[in-house]
Length: 100
Image 1 (cartoon, rainbow, N blue to C red):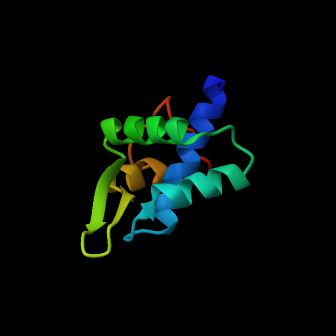
Image 2 (tube, rainbow, N blue to C red):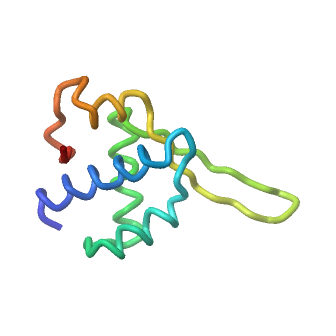
Image 3 (cartoon, rainbow, N blue to C red):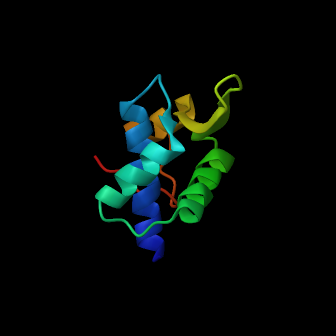
C-alpha cells in the first residue's frame, strides 16, 4: 500500500466513524465498507490502521462481549480529537487525509 493510499484510508475510516457518532462502528463493518470502496485491504491491514489511529488519539477501540451468547466484537469509536481533526479545529495530521 502506498503512503498516499494509507493516508486516504485512515481519513475514510475516521469519516465513517464520525458519520456514526456517538455510536461506534464494528471492525467488521469497517472492513466491508473499505472493500466496497476499492481500497487495498485485509483484516490485518485494517487493524494496523485502527491501531495507528488509536495511538494518535483519534479513535478508541473497545471489545464488546455478550458472554451468554458467546459473541465478541471489536468496536471503533471516534474521539473528540478525531472529530476536531476532521472539522479542521486542530492542525492537520500528515498521516491522515482529511477531505473537505
